[in-house]
Length: 301
Image: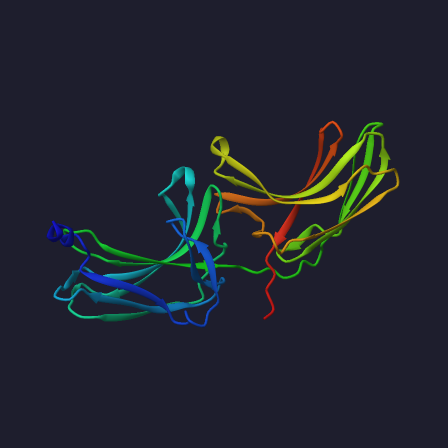
C-alpha cells in the first residue's frame, strides 16, 4: 500500500524564496486552511525577485516540458468558490524541456509590478497575490507550488477633507445636530466630533456610535451585501437635556479596518459608515448613518 501512495507523490520538492524575504516587513494573513501565517509585504510598482529551487527526491529524476513562474493577482468570490478572476498575470519561463537530476536553482525577477488593488480577505470575497511555479509534465499531472504575498497601497493626505454636519429629528419630539471633524480618516486616525440636543421630548436612555463595514459582491440580481458592526462606543448613559453637548472621541487604531474599496475590478466594494444609535426608555431605537472614507497613510518608520 505504501508503494502505491508513494507512486503518486511528486518526484521533487519546490521552494520559492524572495530576495529580500528576511529583511522585508512581514504581515499576518489568513491561509486557505483557516490558519494565519506571515508573508512579505509589497506595494504597487515594486520589483519582486527571488529564487525557485527544484530538489529531486533522492533516486528520482524529474522529466518535464518546461518550468515557469507566474505572478498572479486574483479575486475569488465565495459564492463562486474555486473560480479565480486574474486581474494581473505575468510569467517568466525558467527552463526549457529536459530532465532534472539534482538540486537546481532558478533566479527570477518581475520589475516594477503594477499591483493596483490591496490584498483583502472578507466575508464573501478574497483578493490575493501569489507566485505560482509550474513544472509541466507529459502524461502525468503538473507539479505546482504557490507562495502568497501581501500588497498594501498608500494614499497621501487628502487636500480637501470637509467636516460632516447634519441635523436629524422626529417632529416635535427630538431634534439633534451632530458634527464630525472630517469625512476622510486614515486607519490610525481619531474621530472627533460633538452632538447637540436642540429639542428633547422623549426620554433617551443611552446613545452609542457604531463603526460599520458594508461589503458588496457581485452585480445585478446576484449582488450580495454583508454588513458587520466592527465597534460600539457608548457616548452617553442617561437622559440628555435641551442645550446639552456630548463630545465624541473615537480612536480607530484598535479596530481591524481596511481602506474603503470602490468597485474593485467590477467585482466588489467595501464601504464604512458611522452609525449613531439612540435608545429610549421603551427600547425603541433611532438611527442615523453617515458614510466615511477610510484610507491607508504611509507609516513613518
